[in-house]
Length: 227
Length: 227
View 1 (cartoon, rainbow over the protein chains, first blue to last red):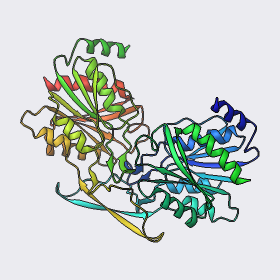
View 2: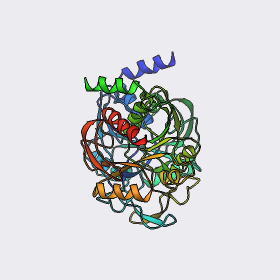
View 3: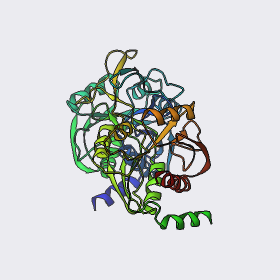
View 4: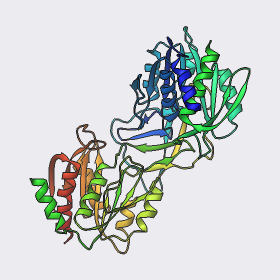
């Protein structure tokens, strides 16, 4: 019954007329033609948000790293692989509201080998991979001249709320959705999630529920905060 | 028509009474609770071989890294994540024929961080990841006291046949199936493949075809070479 109510509420058009851009999924950072660094993000939370935004009447674009998910109805998906690709796609999209739900790789290999790197030396030989920082997509968008209403995610395994509040201030975000990814019942790859929603003035824990139900609730709060 | 003929040929039991162990897919090597190193192997070639071996009457076990594929009929799948997991599973399986089709990570991070590693220093700061060599699964199995008939894969982007022949000798394999993974029409993630089959005495290119059709052909040759 609640789902129906919320659904009706959205079809009334909480976000109608607005451009929403959402990033989702992991990024993959190539080491060589066959190897890469990635992370366990399934993209489910970002896709659920895209669905909820489209249902709320927004013109919704979903910039997605490699996932197994199909694109929600009335959402335009832009497929990317690396953080650099994702940044370029994000910079090319006009947005009133920007939701950074992707688990963007903080680091990428300094160089991408043109050929598959061969194992070297004896079995006991170790090697090092030099990593450089990727551009910070959400901070780059927030620092732009036409700054959208900015919603970030913080996926952490410890000190969740502290890190998230720090992210809100440092990256000049309007809302941060903090996720405890050390819990196996929720978060990465799970169908359920529970988050703490953080603004400059408030902090609220939203109990575990399906990612779609959570997305409906988050979109309602984003719409209110945006006004 | 050819498919039907081959299929009938297999149902006659080319490998009946034999234990076949196949590794397939990529491995994932954890950096911390959310990040990992992996590769683009889809597992399709290994799964096709498992299907063809089961159809040929073998008791077939498939030790699989993370893939999107479902287990073929009459195949026992053992799910693993890392190279170390895969080695332990392989050592626990008795095999008459061992087919190493997995793209096992050569290296893993020296330590797995217990908590998500935080970005450090300025945007221009680089960092290094120390990598150590993983155990060589196929060489370890080939060096065991009850050495199975050993079939390896070589996924290369250059000097394909040279590397593959070197692998045959160094790791004491009976056959090596060499794969050019720089070609986008075949190999990793593609439904088709073309390979060069290498033994101590011979070398033969098998034209592009579906991975299942190729698996039928490879199983026929493996069965002949095993006898």
